[in-house]
Image (cartoon, rainbow, N blue to C red; front, side, top):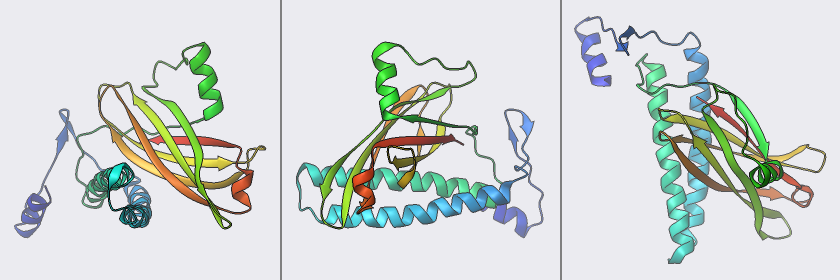
Length: 217
């Protein structure tokens, strides 16, 4: 599509796109969305570099395999975000529907809900947080490594791009530190995202709960 657009510009040919039989028009806030996507991409470059450094610490075994799998997953998400960036920058249609919404849930609340009853959802809501959890996997005098796990479910008939913020909060709900994740979930499926955050002392010792704020693009 980029080559097509370049050739059209060269020969001064107008291009029009249609999606589901309707004329495609770029979103009015395309510039704002582009800035947000570029910011996420910049964050991902840092996170991928950190993940690659972490994977290089191991010479083999299950730990290295998991670390390399995390890197590959992050690069896949990075590729999807870059595709989104190009679509916004050059006014190209993406043949995936994006919806916007925010929700949050705590690991404690979700575990209780799963034990007693199925969470009730509005009819228009087609996705849900299945689980959010974290634990300390390594610590020293400077920082604690909090490994987190977030499982999301896409109950719709189309793939969805998610953007999540994982917050490490104290007992009063104040955010001590946070991490972020983005990813595409296929139709009618669940996907588990994992990562870690180095939370510095003394705040690390005050983390009492983990929250996930999830947006759907």
